[in-house]
Amino acid sequence: MSDYSRYLPRDVSVRSSFWWTYLGSFIGSAWMMLVGTVAAASNPSLDVAAAMERAADTIAPGLGAVLLLGALLGLVTISALNFYGASLTLLSVADTFRPVRSGLGKRMASLLAAAVLATAIALRSASDFVTRFGDLLAILLYLFTPWTAINLVDFFLVRRGHYSIREIFNADGMYGRWNWRGLLAYGLGFAVMIPFFSTGIYTGPVARALGGADLAMLVGLPVAAIAYYLACRSMDIDQDRAQAAAADIGLEPQDDPLR
Image (cartoon, rainbow, N blue to C red):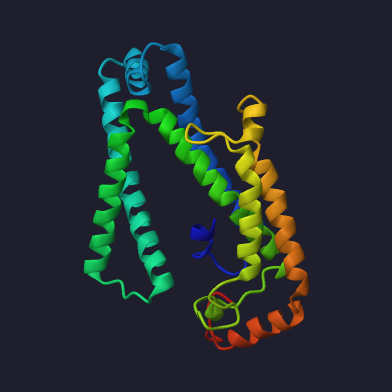
């Protein structure tokens, strides 16, 4: 939603931005997932690619090869976007510790580093890729859970959407380089999830006692949210809002056609 909404006019509501983005993403991907599920269930002895090829060939001979070629082109496109995102992340991490001017050389180096690392991980996991990929998704879920809670609480309950665009990019500005409240809440939220982790890499004691059930997100989300909300009670919200408004005065021209 954040990617699409930045190009929309001011009078488009948050509700409309959310639902149209969500429905487009959901409908655009869910139907293909359902097709793949049905094809794989109909051919349990085959892998997904072979099952999709056979299913397509039953509709029209030779359609399976065309379908797989189209899937390959889509995979190449998605992989390119993933490498691009990984390179931006690496540059952003580096910029957090020391300002980095991202020229062509640094962008190519970060892309190469991301490609080499991703390829090495994929080759090492090739013998049991589905399980290893599931572990990766679980770890990402663990990392994103407290982060999501903090962002939602900050936006809807603490600052209620009042931010300074200028100050977000000012390391020495009103938001500072590090947000101790956010870091504290994140640390607490992540720590309480550890006993509930359930992956092939590590399974916590509570998850083992529950037969492998993973309840980490259901624990970490409320703990991080409550911790951040309580930590923010010492903030002067009115002053924060006034600073944000003052910092962005003159940010956009008065004759902005989107107003």
